Length: 595
Image (cartoon, rainbow, N blue to C red; front, side, top):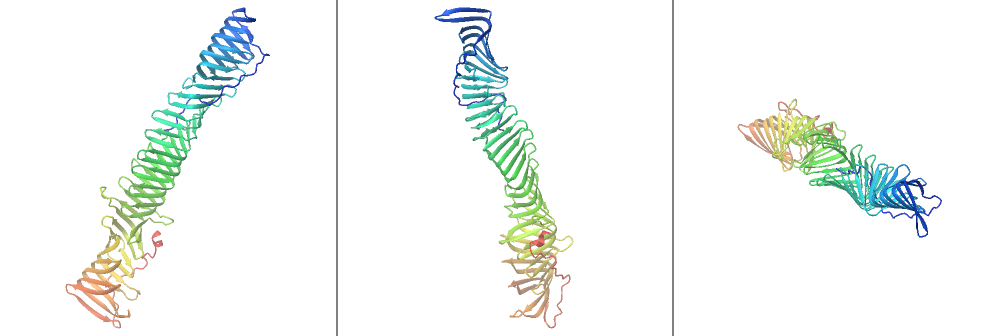
């Protein structure tokens, strides 16, 4: 993914050569050893020529060479030149000028500076022995055995343990290549600082930064100025990027983004571990690919097992399905997942949603199973818009799937203690199905007959079908033991009974009803002042009843009808066989569906 950085030493800075130290005549350059010492005159000066295993000393500095020409406190050194200062610093060269008065030295040829594990190679170097500063301007290579750094200019501050590299800086390593203009390196803390635009390349990936550091010893890097990376078409950006080589974790922090073809990832912080292949998006997390869009407080993605989890309130938009929950866990390879905690699921094509405590689902088959309540309720609930009014449906369990993967048709199954509430329609049954293709609800009996209420009417049958057309109530079928009861005062009951009954709606009101199979009707007649005047009792094999203003306007009989009108004073207020008026099961509000 990102970082990569160097294993060794390398860094740079735009520095200038330090001023030479003032002449110090109190400490002279002394001869400690030589195989041959010759004196000769040059003008008015006496020079000395030392040959064979020459060793000179000035304070704590030792100088070795094959041949030396001494002119008072200065020397010209030739052949296998070595300057040692302290226990760890050594400089090798083919030739050198040594200025004892100012404690300066210029070396050339195959020059090598060795300080601990660091080795610096160049063909010309200036070294200030007093300030302990080495400089070069002809290019040099620094190596620690594994990686190499090259630069045109360099400044090595031995006391401060700082090396600055300037101009065409290139670091090569078995794992990466780095290019910059300016870098610095602390030889004690082994911190590399990037002081100019820097490009790091490794096996198809690149990192760009304009500032930051790399901890060589702890294998830790941080990029904090316009950092970005590119890898196999993937581009990452953040205000800050970090890499921890011990934990193998990469971090993009602050407006972090990762983009690639058909994929977009954003968060306050993005973490990725190369060992576990786990990515974590923290804070305003967002993930989008060609099939889905995921948002949440935190998204955890396991690329090895193809699973992701949402912690904190989150949302997944997958084609036509939308899931929102407090926790979401999904296996992309198997297509299985679950959402938990005030779950909201919506199908934008079927145009209905489910609210639940938990929802199990399969992306491939588009199967969902919901149970538990939303917002303090104990039961899942379906929500749909019917005729510009919200229809609520609850049950112990709600199941939905697509019977045919080639279409967007969806089937809903509601099981046990099903209840429906709409402002102008309520229902109760043991189980229910709804198909989004034909928009028909099927109400089934297991222990108790299904019931539907509309205004002052109650509809019942062993099985009930309710059809919608254009999101409006269209038809109602009462199958086997159909019974329709209407009462505005719960004193006198209009009753329509038969084997099967079909009711036709217009403007959300029953305008027509067809009853077949031993049809029987008992309804009360009203005068112009809506006072009861009598009761009509009719029977036939079939009948069609017409309604207006919630009253019976006419009846058409089929077969051999029989009927009578009984004045109110003589009426016995007969009830049809199987009559029941159920008030306890009727939901009066959405609250009656929740528990």
